[in-house]
Length: 122
View (cartoon, rainbow, N blue to C red):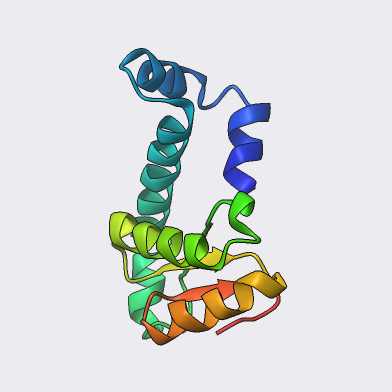
């Protein structure tokens, strides 16, 4: 929701978003491309903190789509995809803390896909 709000209420992403859509990306793909790039950049920025604290600090979170809040399997797949495409050790995948997503949170953590929710922290 943080990126969605930033993209929809700020002019900061207008040019990048417009270029991606004009290049043939659908709106959702363009959105995720912007999100992934920003998360990767933030992870690089915080990587020295992550390294200096042996992983105790320096994390950057990115959330799966809130539209998946009632979709256990969809949430697991989205978390795996984000983990793979961001590909940074200090990226945390945020999952909605709904009844349907509790199994998702458990599976994602068990698989090592650094998942957490707003109510369940590592």
